[in-house]
Length: 300
Image 1 (cartoon, helix red, strand yellow):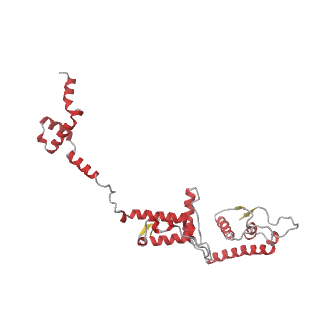
Image 2 (cartoon, one colour; image 1 turned 120 degrees about the vertical axis):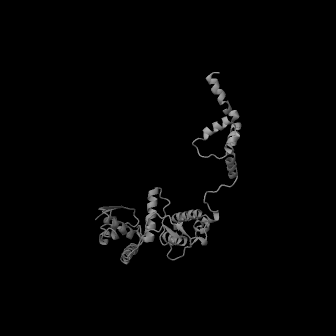
Image 3 (cartoon, rainbow, N blue to C red; image 1 turned 180 degrees about the vertical axis):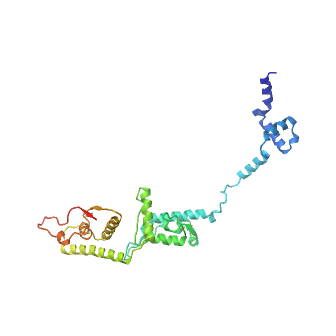
């Protein structure tokens, strides 16, 4: 017999059609090696040489089928009612909603005449939380390292109410640049929770607000019926711009260029840029311009 035919004949028992028979025979060998023919025992023994003890395949397959019929659950997962991860996720969403919607209930009416309805998305029940969770500690998710990384839910809500729903409201969601939006949000939150204003700074702000209000009252009394663009309602622009300029000067800014609309321009010229009122109101003719150029430069 030719060698090729001899090799073909030797491999015939291993053909695909005999696979179930060979598998059953191998199972029998695993259970009791002496129960199979010597040639098969020798062949199977060569397959096992150098390998760890092999389990009977049918038992392993039966165990897999049995486990597959049971509901799958992540290892170590607790029942939904006790799932701390779900609660933490709800708190993280609550923090984000306060940052985006907190300004809707900010206390911006000093007389308390306006009643602002509280959005449902700021209620604990909307996130699956309840008063029973108020004394549980959660991660705050604060990016600034100056803020506590873990707090009780009661303290987290107190900070969020003070920062976003107090006497100052801020909107960030409209800023399309992610880095810019996150930076603004972090600086605002850090300033509200950690920033302090000294008594001297408070007096300076009051002085600037009084000066802005005083000029507007003078213009309203002296030039009744004259067309002007009053700053009334936006008096905070004066101390705000003054602080920006002072902070810029401390950080090395050498020149500040202000380009603005007509509204509040006279007030900015007098109370921010130091233009003398006597020069501002000195007109030689009826058609002369008394409010200065549209752009002014301030050098430090």
